[in-house]
Image (cartoon, rainbow, N blue to C red):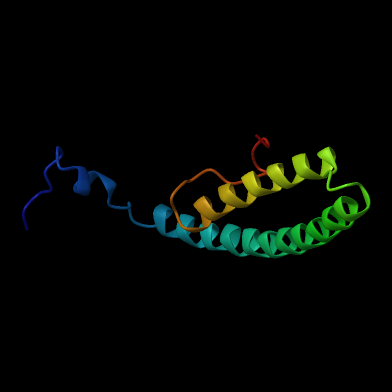
Length: 100
């Protein structure tokens, strides 16, 4: 059997036996946990949306700034979570990293 070329980027990315296989199962665990957190986040977003709409109805179409800022932060978190879930990023969202 021919030896792998050390300059070939594909050859360098192949997982080592044992350790990398364990990491993929750990990633699955993180993905399941984050999927549950995304589900909770969607529920929270729905509730905040309804509250913001009621506030705007009663406040001459002026939104609550704190709720709007919370919605922006929640959107950023959901985007980070989606990037991790789809393997576009290895960075896990809060609580594993800081909220931007």
